[in-house]
Image (cartoon, rainbow, N blue to C red):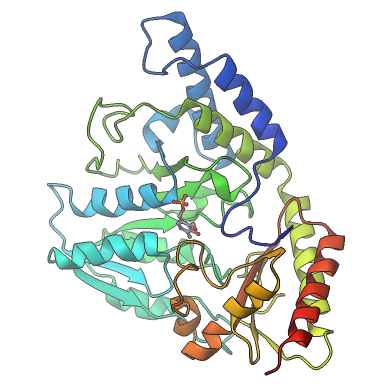
Length: 392
Ligand SMILES: Cc1ncc(COP(=O)(O)O)c(C=O)c1O
């Protein structure tokens, strides 16, 4: 099996597994049970891990308990950010601004808000052929974001075409009119260097399983400066995590996530170069397949606003689903993981101007830490063979 679907999830790094195993075997007490030593020891490990996550994001570790809420992943973090801000009892504004290419974990919550009477504005992105393909038009954004806007939610990098959004510039636009800026940085964190303070966002979601950590754990950064962002809790219960997210904290997951992020940040420059080279090799080898026509979807591979590990291509004359069935031993995808089971063509690809048919004929690859050059070569041979075997 060759795994080239690292946008959907990543393999847990064995070093992370080792850290988590020891937590499961020895430090299994509830971090909330501070009445006994075992609980206090776990609570200490959890708080050290949250401080470490803060440091990796260039945040002040002393503010970590206030600024980081641990969740079950990015979907929950996005829901907490969106509903938490918009449904807060003191929220008077009734408009949400987002982008057509967002993940369903943003689009679905804002659709719910629309049903509840909020005005939702979805910004378009530059089309294929434009040098900023996939990015929003900042001028348009600044016209639409006003003192009526409660929340602006724009992803940091796209999970299908890897394009970055200009979050820093957007943050200035939002803050001029007092709107709160949330960014879903699920695909960026652990893969590209990122300084939250420089970015200027108020809320930011992330998820451990995208950076070689475990599934089912993630977090939401909630700025406390210049003032604390008011969030209405979405999960009520024992009042854990300063009442912002009740429920026993996933101590094993949080410790695993911190270790995964520490490793990712430590190895970042080499990892990004490696990913870029592997992705380049894949694209070059695909283009060398005789008699086939592949088109690149999204930003140019040399563009600075594209994730190093992302490749998205249109294969002329064959549907992505068909190619995936033919290449049984090759893991790739035709959209985002949660929607790739549906036969619907990608909304992201259509947003950059592809037709539904072109979107159906597209494939997304994500190389990663465990991908080898040999695997890239084998993957392209498999694709070449499968394409030869079909009559079109
Ligand atoms: C951009 C983006 N946001 C949110 C999610 C959902 O993350 P999780 O699986 O942690 O809920 C994903 C995962 O596919 C993603 O790529």
